[in-house]
Amino acid sequence: MLVFSKLKTYHFVTLVAWLSRGLQAILQVLIMSTLTQILDVTEYSVFILISSLLVWFMLADIGLGYALQNKISKLKSCGKDYEVFIANAFFAGFFLVLLFVLLTWLISFTLLPVYLSGVAGEADYQSEFMMSAVLMICSGVFRMIYKVWFALGKGYWSSILPAIASLAAYLILLYLLSINKTALYLVFLACFLPLALFSMLPYTVYLYRLRHKINLKIEFFRSLLIKSGDFLFFGFMSALVLNIDFFIASQFLSADQIVQYSTLLKIFTLGMFIYSAFLMAIWPVFSEKIAAKDSEVVLEMLKKYLPIGMIFIIFFTLLVIQFGPYLYVFLIKNTSLNITAALVVLFGVYFLIRVWTDTFAMVLQSGNNLKPLIRILPIQALLSVIMQLVLANYFHIYGLLIGVILSFIFTVVWYLPITSYKFLKENSGHAPSI
Image (cartoon, rainbow, N blue to C red; front, side):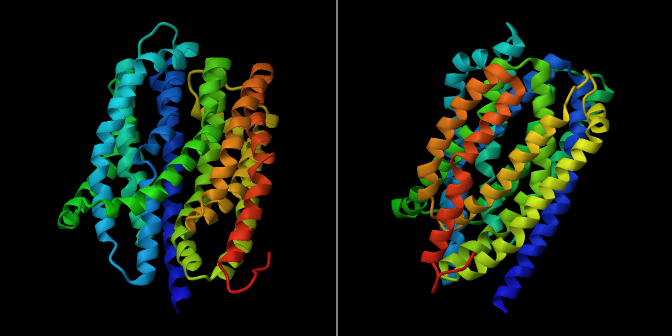
C-alpha cells in the first residue's frame, strides 16, 4: 500500500507539472513572439545572452536546495524531524543573495563588455545586466522552496508557481507593447521580476512560520554543506557542459545565428520539460527506495519510463521538422530564420542523449551518490569547451552543437548507466537485472 500511495503521489505531481509546463511552453512561445516585436535583432540578441546566464545564477543556492530535498526524504523515511534543517537553510539563503550580488557587481565591469562585444559593440548594458542579475540570483536562492515541496510530496506547487510567473511576465510584456515602451531594462524587469517574486514570497512565508526552529549551531549546517558542495560542483560542471555554448556563441556567431540557436534551443528545452518534470516528481520516490535498499523498484521504473522519454523526443523532433517553418515565422518578427532540417535533427540527437544521461544522473543524485558525476563531469566539461571552441570556429552554429554532442558520447553516455547499475546493485538485497 505504501508503494501504491507513493506512485499515486508522484503521478499526480507529474500530471500537474505537465499541465503547468504545457502552459509555460505556450507562454514562452508567446513571450518570444512579443519580445521580437518590442526589440530589434541586436537588442534581442543581447537579451538572449544575458538571460542565458540564468542557469549560472541558479547555482547561487550553492547546492543547498538538492541537499535539503534529499535530507528531508531521508529523515521522513526514519520518522525524524526535518524542519530545523529547512529553517536554517532558508535563513542562510538571504546571506547568499547578498554575497552573490556583491560578487557579480565586482566582476561585471570586466567580463560583461567582453561577453557582449560580439553583438553590442560599444553600447553599455551594465545597469540592465545588474538589475537582471539581482533578480536571477534571488530566483536561484529562493527556489529552495521548490525542492522542499518536492520532498514533501507537494511538488505541484513547484510547477504551478513558475507557470503563474510566466503568465505574469507575458501580460506585462503585452502591456509594454500596447503603450509602445521598448526600453530594454523594462523587458528584463518584466521577464525576471515575476520569476523572483513567486519563489521569494512563499520562501519568506515558510521561513517565518519556522522561525522558532532557527538554530545556528554548526552541526545543522555541516551535514547539508557536505552534500551541497557536491551538488554545487555537479551543477557548475553541468553548466560548463550545457551552458558554455552562449559564451562561445557570443564570440563566434552573428546576432542572427544567435537568434536561430536560441530559438531551437528554447523549443527543444520546452519539449524536454515534460520529461524533466517527471524526473523531478519521482526523485523523492527514488531517494526513499534507495535509502530502504529497495533498488529493484527503481530499476523497474527506469525500464518502464526511460524508453517513453526517448520515443517522445524522437516524435517531438519530427514535429519540429514538419511544422517548424510555420512556428519560426510566428516566433521571430524582426528577422527571417533560415533553419535547416539538419540543424533540427542535430538538436533532436542532442536532446535524445540528454533524456538518457539526465535519467541516470538523477538516479545517482537521488541516492546522494555524486562521486561518479564528480569524476566524469570535469572531463566532459573540458572536452565540451575544447570541441565547441574548435568546431564553432570552422562550422559555426553546427559546430557548436556537434561539440557538445561529442562530449556526451565520449563520456557520460556510457559511464552513467554503468555506475548507476553498480550503485543500485550495492543498495539492493540481491543484484537487480537490467
